[in-house]
Image 1: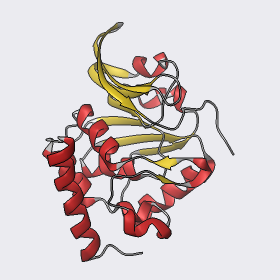
Image 2 (image 1 turned 90 degrees about the horizontal axis):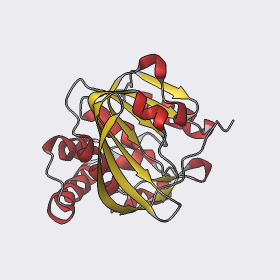
Image 3 (image 1 turned 90 degrees about the vertical axis):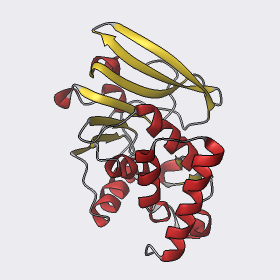
Image 4 (image 1 turned 45 degrees about the vertical axis):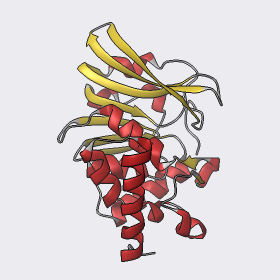
Length: 216
């Protein structure tokens, strides 16, 4: 699959939708969404629908998130160029690519080996290079590279992974869906001090569950 004028036109329509219907106003997010070829991260049978606001199945019984979810999570992160961002759940690599297009320094972890291999190959094909891409347990974060300016969790967690909060800079933000499956709510935590956090709530979403350990 290539990135054609048709795909670019569909991305423009998607960005207009995100701006007007979803209310995304961060131009850095919208520019990244207009640049990243989502159709290259999903199976070719879904190519014609890649720029609709829909989730699609990917490897390892996971899904690629709705574009609106990717855009909203990215906007809530308030990413600035050059910031260190830890992504928990690389998945197929689409959200990673959006963060890289936003000029973030991305450290990303994936526990499903099939998805780790796919995303690594796909990002390389597109000449997109995270600072570090890891196969491992997202709950543990990446303490070797901490602290991070921002942390984004792309899968739902039943309980707050406190280890991740420890890896945030003071003033840093973590965006994470929390709660039981099918009842997850998107939260943003801002680290005010070593053990002090501001917690904001942004409504219900549906994410794949966050799983511990790894899957070979």
